[in-house]
Image 1 (tube, rainbow, N blue to C red):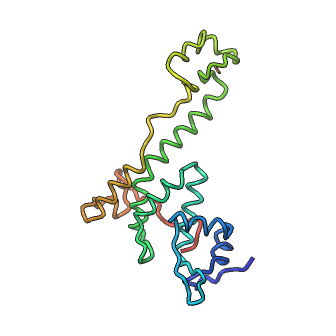
Image 2: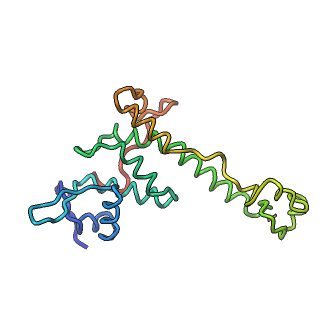
Image 3: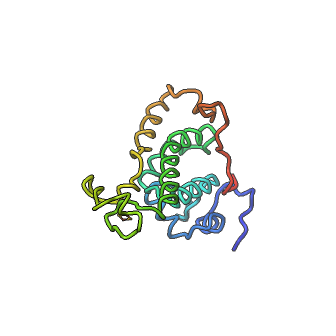
Length: 195
Ligand code: FES
């Protein structure tokens, strides 16, 4: 693997791949999907600004927790394309991501804590099913594992739309400063890439 110079402000697709750990084919796919952008040289080669590393890291981390690419693209559209995103730009992304991630965390905790109990799936195969779901009473509520159902879905799309609308100038100061409602600073600094 080639070590990418920390001084390089633009990366080839190979360099972006080496530093991000994402295959070039996946990077080209991300570009086709509008998740990252490049400019073309006179010889028609791609060049990515260095901050693309952070976008790629964001995409990968989001995919790992099961967020669809369309949603990721929508949230990334909050970032400026004509310049390197600032902490304030990333704070806006973080703002609309927070509720969705909290909901996903709750869902995973629910799954972790419930798997040894009856989950109301209709199988009646666990010894506690007779108590928790006698004669599959939960089946009357609808399909699926009734006791595992996630809380009401949060829509990052709606949050993104609100922030896009607010980006016309009316967005509140808390999001711009990266501060949370309780006054603490939200993490917007890099732990994965090196911009
Ligand atoms: S675990 Fe399936 S109905 Fe109880």
